[in-house]
Image (cartoon, rainbow, N blue to C red; front, side, top):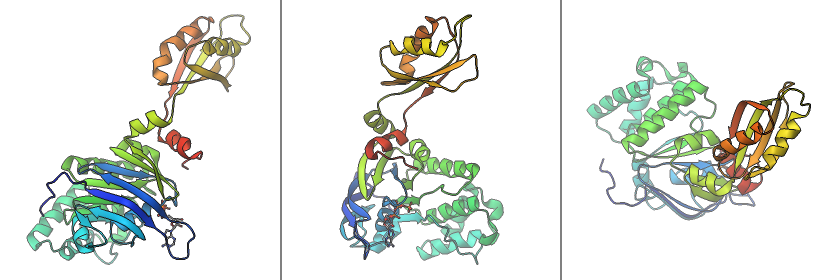
Length: 331
Ligand SMILES: Nc1ncnc2c1ncn2[C@@H]1O[C@H](COP(=O)(O)OP(=O)(O)OP(=O)(O)O)[C@@H](O)[C@H]1O
């Protein structure tokens, strides 16, 4: 299939609104964003934020109340078949055909999308191999594990060579190993130039996988940028935690260390944390990057005569961004 060669975005959403019947608020409440071609883009938000509904509209499964959505140049409302030919979706819940083998699931999907016979067989072999399903190719799907089913759904989605792949909560419910495998496959797809739009409520997944992340809550897009830029914009600072051994004859080493740390430029405050006596653990809340304060913190501790035996940096992440934007935790 011919690829779109212009610089038009892979996905474009303008003022999208979806209100389900008999609901008194919008599930998607005026969302606009664009995904670049070749990008891995994440929608990050808690359950009920409107991520699945947004993907539903983009994949022609949900009809928008208003607004516009375009995938690989096809307007999803005006020309759903064109959109469906250029996109693929891996839904949250498994929807494989249980009566078919793994290979048959792939072949039927490709046949439905009009891929010729020789090409279907070639693609199925290639994808079964890439997704580590070679040995499972001729097993009935009801015998495969949850992780294998997820891999098979992604492989199936790729059978018609989509330009944009939608992954709805790709690693929810998977064990750590299966999760890792899915993440590696998403990175492969990026290298191959496939645009990926994924939804997640897992900030580690968003931070690790996505070139850019849109933070959604209550149907609204609160901010959108690279994970690093979001963190820089919405969370200032982190923590430096030190474990210290007191010098001979000092009873309140924690108090002395806290006093010394509070005089360090960039330290906003300190707390004493539980520790095994006679060691003490003190956490300093700092402005900016905590790594930049390592040297002055070490110096301040040394000035008390205590010896540092452990240091831990607490760097801000997308969870802090979410809290800063909404006042609530993501999970
Ligand atoms: N078919 C439906 N009919 C009525 N309300 C719905 C329907 N689907 C979703 N909703 C509601 O729309 C809102 C957004 O749900 P949506 O599933 O899009 O959120 P989400 O961020 O994807 O969360 P999840 O990860 O739980 O799917 C929620 O309040 C949900 O209850």
